[in-house]
Image (cartoon, rainbow, N blue to C red):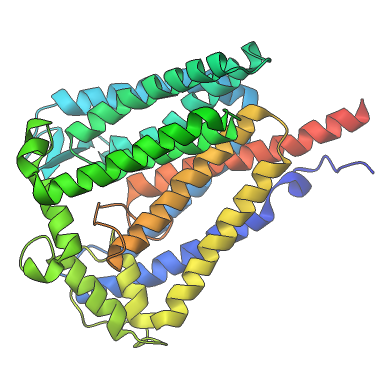
Length: 393
C-alpha cells in the first residue's frame, strides 16, 4: 500500500493538536495568574504573540530535511557556545547588555529582538550537535566494541562540559541538569554497552548524594570547590522551607499553600488568592492547582504524559539514527523540565527556576521548546517522505 505524498497526510496533526491544548492551558493559567500579581503587563497577550511566532518557526523548520539539519548542527552548536561566551564577558548591570537577577547573569538585551536567555536556545542546539556527533561516530564504527563506546562517551563528555562550564558559571543549576539529562538520553539511545553505562550511572548517583550531604554538613568544602553559597540555601529551603519563611523558602511555602488550598476541584477560574511572586512563569502549576484543584492538575499531567508518549512513538518509527537521537534528546529535555518544575512546586525536588514547557510565560523558553518540536515535526514529516520514495523505488 502506497503512502500519500500530500503534505496534509505527512503532517503530524496529533502533535499539533497537543500543542493547541497547551496553548489553551497556557493562556488560561497566565491570564488568571495576573489577577493576583502586581504586573501591569498583559502577559497572556504577549504569550499569544510568542505562540504565533513559535508556530511560524515550526512551519519553517518543516521545510528542511534531516540532512539539512545535519549540516547546520555544528554551526548552531558553535553559535550557542558563542552566545554563552558573549554573555559571560558582556557588561552587566542596569542599562547594560547583560542582565543580572538575584545574583544570576543569564539574560541578554539585544536590539530589536529584546531580552533572551541564551541557555534556553543552546539546549536545542546542543541536541543537534550531540545527535550529529553520535550518528557520525556510529557510521564510522560499525563494529561496536568497548573501545569505540569509550571513545563515544569521551566525545559526548567534551561536548557536554563546554556549555556546562559556562552555564554553571552564571550560575544555573537547573539548566545544567537538563543538559546532563539530554546527554544521558542520547547516549543510552545510541546503544552504548551497559558495561560502561552502569558504572558511570552508579558513580553519578553517588556523586549527587555526596554533594547533597556536603551541602548540608560540609558547606566550606563545597565553597572551596567553586560552589556558590546561594545554592546551599536552595537545598535548605527545599528540605525545611518553614525555617526560611522570609527568604528562599517563601516561594515554596506559597506554592504548596496554593496547590493545597485548591483541594479536589479547585476554587474556579480567576479565584486564586494566594500570592506567589512570578506565578505566571516558574510557579504556573500552583495557579492551576489552586484554581482547578487535583482534577485540573491531573489532567495537565496526563496531557504531558500522552504528549511525551506520542513523541516516543515517533522515535520508534524513525529509521534514520540522526532523527532518532534528535527525538530522544527532545523527549529528555521536555520530560526533565516537566518533572523538575512540578516536583519543585510540591517539594519533591529543589527549586531551580525551570519553567513548565509550553505553559509557563516566557519567550526564550517557548521559542526553545517550539524549535525542538519543530525538529521532531521535520523528522516525522520527511520520514514519511522517505518511506514513500523507498516504496516507489
